Image (cartoon, rainbow, N blue to C red):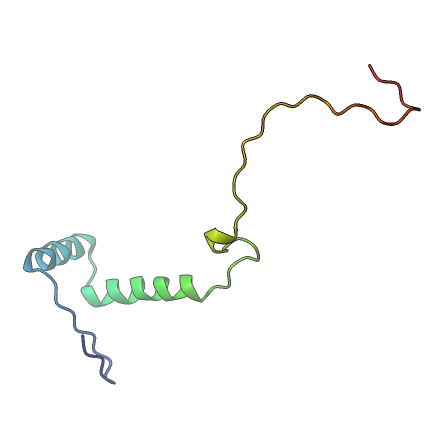
Length: 84
């Protein structure tokens, strides 16, 4: 879709979706413009917030999970500590 310098946003959707959207908006007492501005503002705000350090990393940088099994305790190598 073309992007101009005006404040207008024009999109093309299926006629059935358009009817359902306008019906849902009418039931909620909202207009398409009000709904769009609210939704767009929330969308933009969510993406402008800084992520918490270490929370949002690429998945490939996460360590591989490992399967841990029960192991025999290591023999006590300290002669001053008795073993049981």
